[in-house]
Amino acid sequence: MAIESIDPATGERLQSFEPLTDAELDAKLERAAAAFPSWSRLPVPERARVVGRAGQILLEEKAAFGRLMTGEMGKLYLAAQQEAEKCAAGCRYYADHAEEFLRPEAAAPASPGSRDEVRFEPLGVVLAVMPWNFPFWQVIRFAAPALCAGNVALLKHASNVPRCALALEDLFHRSGAPEGVFQSLLVGSARVGRILADRRVAAATVTGSEGAGRDVAATAGREIKKTVLELGGSDPFIVLASADVDRAVETAVKARIVNNGQSCIAAKRFIVADAVYDRFAAGFVAAMKALRVGDPMASDTDVGPLATAAIREDLAAAVDRSLAAGARALTGGRPIPGPGNYYEPTVLGDVPPTAPAATDETFGPVAALFRARDTSHAIAIANGTKFGLGASAWTRDRAEAERLARELEAGSVFVNAMVVSDPRFPFGGVKLSGYGRELGPYGLREFVNVKTVRITGL
Image (cartoon, rainbow, N blue to C red; front, side):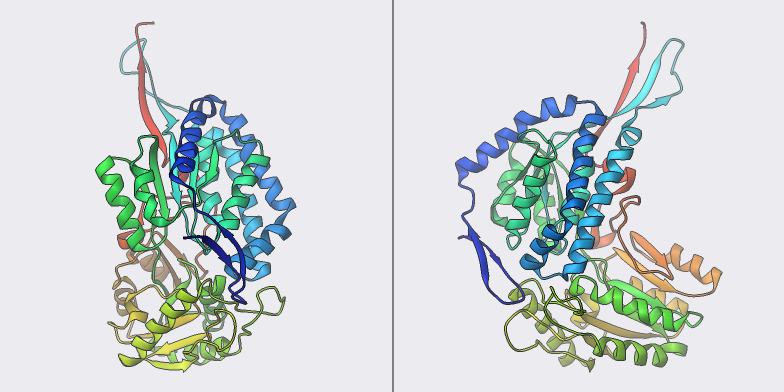
């Protein structure tokens, strides 16, 4: 079956690609394995220079990369250019700090004349199974640290963004990466298990669905290979009685519709203290209702199309089941007729705890409102999910802020701010949101051999 690029705003087929044959796939695996020894032996500054050059190209060509992302998965054009800028910043961060993060750590000598240290050495070929929602950033936040560490990369990108996958391969080729150091594999998801089981692949990282994470982790477990999993979430956005409600409303809208609502760390469950619930709900519903849905290339569009027709169908089904369970549509609640994968910005109230809007990850501009009696109840609702990726909480009480930071079960907690990823800080989750970390020094060290070395008698 062909791998197709389809414009989410119009339904137009942009380009089709034939998946790699078994022979072509094997050749790419062999090139990756052959590239690793020489790439891993290069001094860190030389590897970092390649990653830094990729960042320069991303910045210089952000308009073209932005058009590519918008045309292939529907994000707003301005947001797509900002994604390219963020990728450039991520490349610069690792280019500037890789040598520091990989420097051997000296330990106290075990005996006179002994030299003891911990070294950080690359593992080899790393398979990255990446999603479509941030088609450049998700890849760069893996590739920049992995390549700086001396690994080589195989990218199995989502099948609806093949042109982005090939553009990323070309990006690293133009930045000076030797042949085989970064390759994109145009294959379907059914072939991921075979690739990971191949002896030439050392480890894998996955950003995607819970099901994809389970499949990759199961294969990696049998093969005893390292994995990092980032599997999404149903992030809470908590507004307590002491919060600046106007600021919270303004940020809540941005936090829900970022990337047309298709972000793992987009706020999805809005948990509001009873004392300010009515005020928050009124402002939030009015702001969501006023959003302009339309052409993602237009500068005045607030919300573009969902990435695929199937994603819109899944979102509509989740909303319908939530309404059938007793939730109320305070605004929206339906797909928008006509060409493109558009869905109304939606706010659901009175959401039962067993409804899909409460239990599942809703990928699209759909928000679920919950009323909390007090701080303890708000925290209980927030933690009452299988996910634990990010959490945003709003309060002007310092003690409450510290309690929220301590008790919320998440990989990131942002108080009086929207959850974002940042190259400088570790990113990942707990519970079914996955394990391991990307970004920061921790992300760079995920795919290294932490080697203890003792040299004595010399």
